[in-house]
Length: 405
Ligand SMILES: *Cc1c(COP(=O)(O)O)cnc(C)c1O
Image 1: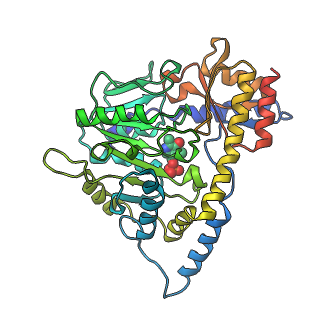
Image 2: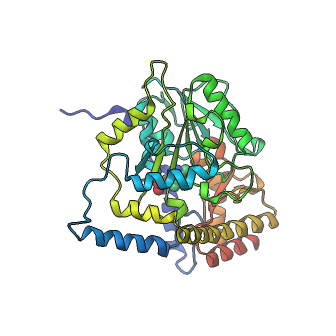
Image 3: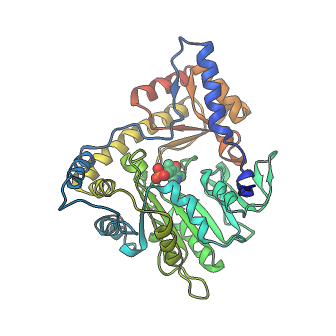
């Protein structure tokens, strides 16, 4: 009789989004005449921009001719894309990243979930709380998180770093030393960003303790303020301790087409000289057969002049929504965070409501759907996430309804 991987059985069910769906459909059934507005969307809604669509069309045409047809992509991804990323993303930041340290993938979810495989089973993991759920769940699958306490929602062998209004939603350095640290800035769900000076403290800490930082920069393109780093490699010493994960999903609308990449610098080595870069290359070559040629061409087009202009307009559209949400809620007396360098607004629930109480309150009284902060971790209790990915018209209507409550 087969046996399953017992580590998978430890995973708690995906309570958050299924509970939201159930509550919303029960409400709609009881109130069929009410127009629900969803500000819980974690997906882009603007179509792919013309520069990307044109690149897709011509890449498809290349596939139709024997002279230009492409089969398997190279293991690391096409050189044209890796060199463009090196030159257009990292060079302007003064960050040293080589083309053979860039691994093209089908997105940041897989990379941020798979990266734990190259670390030992007894690796001690630290995560921010609240957090994007992939980091912890994949370490559960990797068998290194200990036991789960359903009452607190915490794993016994994970170091949680609370992010609340008291620390501007940027975790303080942990007292117990981890081996692997997950950081995500600008942050989902809190919308917080980190200053370069504070990120430098993390890099120094990781180097001092020989820990590795996995830096999820999926929302880098939303940064609007000076002094907020676009890449961890802007910090001195990051090449010996930091892996950076990037995505084309939120900056260019590739959530459905799929494209991302991970940077693993050659300078991250064990005391015996084993390079993490080589282990990741081995994994990539064994378990992944490349992002499609046409999608890599589309990714290259994002960095063209038109591509930058057009994707910049999409980001500006979402950030106009973010500003409307943030300002509107602030006027209505809410404590609101994020929404400046990220498409997420994180608000304190009023009158000490729990996150779920506020969810019900908003659904019933404003017919607006958001995401309870407690669903992202215990420190998210008493907070609530709204996203800027809806249409401007719906966003305005939703916020005006909340202001009228
Ligand atoms: C959306 C998101 C991703 C996923 O990106 P894909 O490239 O679409 O897989 C990764 N990290 C965070 C924090 C995200 O919010």
